[in-house]
Image (cartoon, rainbow, N blue to C red; front, side):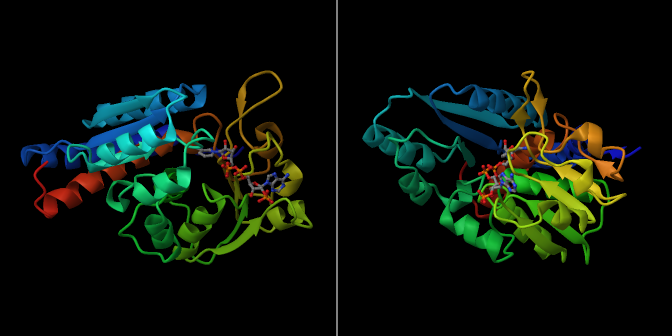
Length: 288
Ligand code: NDP
């Protein structure tokens, strides 16, 4: 039976140190504040927002939600976004994406200050991830995978890691974070010739394809660590990952559940980024 890599254990492990960093900031008269920018009322955004506010508040952070109607004009949104970005009481921003088609998302990426960009949408932060420069902010989900591997003491140096997925949200930045820890990476995608064969070579297999239950037992080397980043809805309307848990669990050495795996850790990483942004501002002598 595989060891279950539960996200809540990682969250609990991070909570103590994050809470004490917040207390230290509060002693200096600063309270880290997350600004959440949302256009419309997409159920996925609302559910993530609820979790993020709960997690951040639980650690002692302030949260401000800037909600715009789905039909806000591009001009009005950009004007308001510039004000939010300039608001010194907000240390870090989470902007829900994809934004509606009529909003110029590229312009938003250019406006957001890299020091406030908590989920790596600005070109400066993306470049830093690819340059292994830790002064930026990596996207929260790939970093949540790294926190989970670290928490459970899963070594990466010299290990064969296969990733399924090459998006800019998960696959590509995650491959860079893993490479920085000296793993040997294979990145698979829809044109990969022998997907199951590539996956079987992995000591650590990471699925981020967005295809419900596509990773079967035939993809997994006996005893491998299996990390499931996928969040999908199955034919019965239940949440499921990209890994067919029932078939893979007996073969894997350890495995993340969905729900309750990587996704659970993401909001703790977000909180960590906001605390870091506030600490950096404090070190520079910023007023709020
Ligand atoms: P994208 O759709 O942007 O990218 C999916 C990637 O997987 C692409 O590179 C695609 O290849 C590849 N892929 C898709 N189908 C197959 C297949 N049959 N065989 C091989 N490769 C395939 O998805 P995201 O990266 O945004 O998200 C991936 C998953 O992670 C989703 O389930 C999403 O819900 C979840 N997610 C979870 C988060 C969390 O907090 N846990 C946060 C963000 C995402 P190609 O490039 O060739 O098209």
